[in-house]
Each structure stands twice: as C-alpha cells, then as structure tokens.
Image (cartoon, one colour):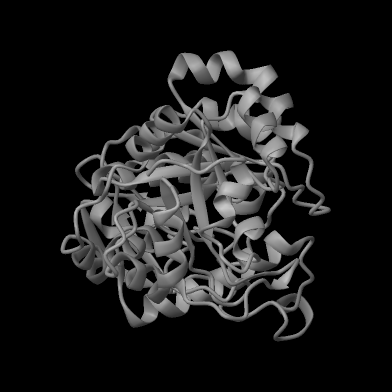
Length: 377
C-alpha cells in the first residue's frame, strides 16, 4: 500500500516535502483543489503530499483506513497477514529499546531486512530512474506460454528450475555455483522456465546473477525470485531482464497485490502469486487479473513441508481456479517422480523445484530423475 501512495508515476503531481512525525501514524492533511486527496506518505524518506487521481485503488477500504490513522500492520492483520512490517531505516538487530525487535519467523526476518535493503537501494537509484531503465530492457518473454507449452509437450507439470546457491534453513546448497552453467544445463534438459534467486542476505543470490543469465543466451523465461515489498523491485527486476516476478500473499496486503499486478501488466511481466493456506488463496482469488498462483507446501511458522497442502487447497478451490483459467504451480517438497505425480494429480500444471536439483552433481541431468523420464525441450 505504501508503494501505491508513494509512487510518482501513479500520481498527478508531487508537492513540497514535510517532516513526518511517525511512519505509523499517517493522516489526511487537506484536500487538493481539483478533486484529488492528499495524504501523508509513510513510505517516503520524508512525508510528501501527492494529489491522487480518481482511481478505484485510492478509494479502496485499505486507503481509507490508512488515512484515518490505522497502521499498515493493523490493516494487514485484518486480512490475516501475520508478517509484520518494521518501517525502520536500520536492521532489526541494530539499535536498542523500541528500535530493536525479534521477528516471529524467518520470513518476517527476511522482510525486515528487505525493508532496509530496498531503502538503501532507492537512495542510490530513484524509482523514476529505475523505471526508465526498465523501458530499455529486452522484451519480456511469455512465462505462462512457456509453462503451458511444456505441460502439453511432456504430459507432466512444466518445470520452473531454480538457480539457488543457499537457503536460510539449509545453508549453502552448492559450493561450486556458476549460475550461467546451471541455467544452461536446466534449459538443455527440458526446463520450461528458470527461477533466479536475487536475495543476497539470506540466499546468497543477486540481481547480477539474473542479468548475467539473461545475457548468456539462455532462452527460457526468467522468474525473479525476490521478496517484493515495493514496486521499485519490480521495475529493477525488469531492468535486469526478468520476465516474471514472485509476489507473496503472506507479505502483501490485497491493495499491494492489485497495484503490483497492474505494474507487472504494464511492463509485460507475469506475476507468480504465492500462497500457503486457504485464507491466502481466497484473498488472491478475489483479485482480478491473477493468472498464475503458486501453492507453497512449506509452513511459514515451522518450515515443515507437507505436499498434501497442494491437494487440500485444490480440492477446496480447484473449481474456482479452473473457472478463472488460472495456472497453478506446486512449490516445495518435490524430490521424486511420485512427488511430482502427486501434485500433478491434484491439478497443478507446473512445479518450481530448486533444492532437489541444485544439490546434485549435475543439476541438469537430475531433471530426468525428478520426473522419471527425460523432458522434451
């Protein structure tokens, strides 16, 4: 929601900066002649007045609540979001007293760290500059088209193969890590699309890896596997060659997802919206324009993996998903042909797999072992 209120390309005009007393107590300041509303923007480094266009998003319940003084976290919690935002300019382990906090789980830790990272990146390169860079990126490739074609071609879920060096739960997965060689091996052995980890602090990934793979001659569409909290990251990913980007429902309020979907559409990108449970799935299914949903079988609280989560959600909401023409991706806990067959029978058309491939001596050849047969490219 902060991205919606702060992003200059979406507003009529910017006015002079004002000092903000607190990122947790935004308020309506005054009306702007011409019909727009002005709000104190908590997301900017300093509060900025913007005249807001007449748009359904600015008349949404979330914005009205935010203007009336509710915090971002309270609005998100009302939607069932358990991941809190810190809105602090330093890492949570730094500082003391109210400035020091303990995250509830690893995802919350990642999001808090990401807030600091994005703030620092935006200070070096403004949104306007990143958006301009995205206009010069190579044309976005058809991510969903590639998945659909691979599914039909092979009769098994299309593979989104992940280029990942490490994870918070498993540590370093591959010491001898060459993202281009791994990407090329995946493509050669039938991967329909590739997922490139870009988080540095927790996954040892980078946007440089994304850009390098895109410029290497690999033709597979690329998913930027990032923990997105700000539209700046979407524009930056596009500028580095991403064709798709991950949006996590456990982190993003409904309004954020709607706005980010609009940005993706304008950039020609695909949004893979990840859900973990029934409540998140129901939220996403109420949003117009969703084309690709990922069901993550890993619990946010315990990190325990249970592939029956995919079957359960598909049994409950599969008819609605089919009616809307949404393609579903199975995520986490997929190590054997039986695992892949299980989620396929539940109704998924694609799978996103990283650990079970990347840990093998030859990640490309490991694809045949995962599916029980060689995939046609």
